[in-house]
Length: 362
Image: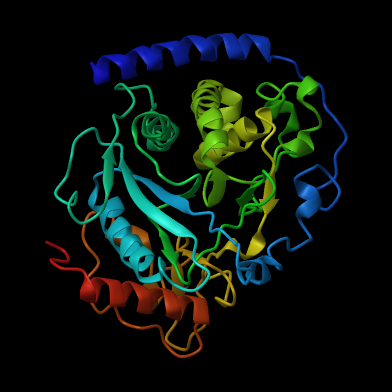
């Protein structure tokens, strides 16, 4: 019965998608500067740190923690699985630390069937999209998996952190969202102004200036559960619609689903605090500083003198893609002297996790 209901829901969404594309076909360019202070209700917070008073708030006797649930979507591939195991190890280490508002954790497994790590990592099994619907873009399963989880799971917390397998938490995370706004990391390569003509097919003029679309993806984002329940179906619909649009598909490529989330959020008038200190991305970001997450999406390649070897396989390297079919070994070699602190910290944290996770690589 549950499966029948889910596929009925999918059909309803597909019909809504077609209707949606017809309705929002307007295309009217608007003048806009690069996202920054004063450009929209959410972006006005770009140069302000609204989190600065939070530690003081927590000293008040009547302060009540606003717990958030961490959710990570993943397939059952070796590649996603080892990353999830490392991610969950560090989640547990910092969950109850000072200033933490980290609540529960769920791996949303969109392979459609349980795997052998269900007892190690709290997991919700979601159904993948019907065969062929993702058109070879597996990330389209992410919004569909969130739709299922939000409808079926008993989520105790009022807020949700959407994270990814290749995130490593480096310190306890407070609830960075405030005053009805989500908290999101701004990505330099999400550029609503640049693609305004295309985006107007999905974000009509009557919804306001293109600056209402924040330069974000769905992750990392902390958002209240009620808002995410509204956004998720639209996120899925817009993702599918963009993938079916040849021009949008070509323009957005692998980050198409990120644009779709940003559009869906704006369509529901959910703004975001653009919190640059949410995470770092080595090797471009060189220090951990006061960040909360290391996102190891880029390869780290250096020579043995610690100099970067951009665009080449380094004499020393760490790249998650080296382990797309096999488990990374325990005790990876540390970087040579001179490599940025962020890269050194990343490798040390992967090594600590793999050293302590039982049955690693089996």
